[in-house]
Image 1 (cartoon, rainbow, N blue to C red):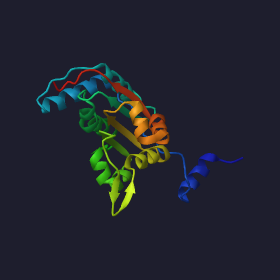
Image 2 (image 1 turned 180 degrees about the horizontal axis):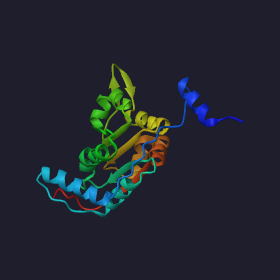
Image 3 (image 1 turned 60 degrees about the vertical axis):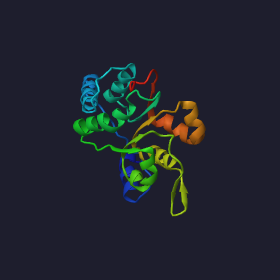
Image 4 (image 1 turned 30 degrees about the horizontal axis):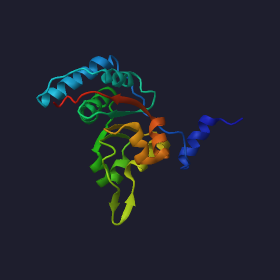
Length: 195
């Protein structure tokens, strides 16, 4: 009988495809941690925290992500960027010693090879980027990222002001299906807090 544990190690040693190396997150008391992080970073910007129902879902993801990333999408001005740029990377670094590299959609295009080399990513404002063109080579940056998220087990935190229907139209069924399969989805609805 095959010892699959040993065979998997042998497969890795010779460069064959193996099971994706998923990132698991478990943060104790995640709701209070998330609240404290939001409060801290918003106060740095001269703003005060307003707890939104969506944040409870993000806290649930932090409690146990089950190896899946996070897709935050919907109405603008509801805190998605603050979460993805500051709060969640700080929490991952503190509780798991994991570095979460942040890129907005434009940086993702300009630094695509750098982005693809990272295992934990926070991508902001997805859907606003154009085609990545470098030395005449056209690349669909987000499609390449999502391909590696599925195949290599990368953890991705994605924020977008687009809804699910528009995301599907923009990236097609294959990429949208990968996004849905590899993330927990949190819809941000309501009035902008920037007012």
